[in-house]
Length: 358
Image (tube, rainbow, N blue to C red):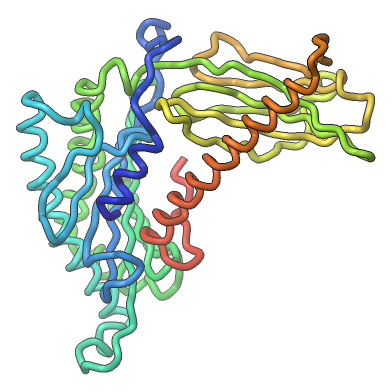
């Protein structure tokens, strides 16, 4: 990601709010955390990609970026900067320089095995190829860890490392040649496992210490239900406001029975918290039979909400306020999706989306 896009993402995530915050430790329960690195590059500069770029995330917070041209690790969040982090940043910078070299080696290995490098060697009109790598680890609620390491090539899943067996899984037949090449190198496989099972969790714990009070905070959502009536159908929209972390479950119930799952849209606010919403269409007059149930780490127990008819007189003011909020959310959504698509296009040109790691 270029610096301008990185700054825009940070501005969108905004300053970290503290209103209504409770930490997981204060509640007497842990929450899972993750450290994820995204590496990406292109053989021919296009879509803004250089030969190698790296982004690092703790949970959903971008904390470091690295560019092939500068060969430096740059902090992307306030808590990751300061005298106490000097040694950490030296290690990160050296580590990412190593990844820079390894990424290039892996890139050429994959292209050689697909005969994609011959065109470049012959000096023919270059065709850009892209490589994406996502790797990292999670510390789960029971304090166990889980590592992941995946490669995507030219917009498709390509290879995935299994630390337990030290083998690679080929997502497509054309990846088998590289799979066999890499499995011959048992030393590298053991190094990969050591990173996923030892180095990565240690680094994540260190970062969580630096971001203590921010990364482990829990901000419970407030929930509201709005009604939008049309001639033949009525839409109920459930909105969860100002919550952190990002993960949330929202579902509609009818007569206390869950309806088919709907996609939940989640977007960042400007203060470091998030908002989410999910809608359902109901026959006119059946609004009270429907309830919205919300589950979040910041809540002691699931929260339910129903639509309540307005009892106040100035309906027009309420409608205008609702429209203003709707326009604001829409504009925020367009901006966030534009940035997210820009990230996706850089990390995975075409229709490629890295598989869900959860």
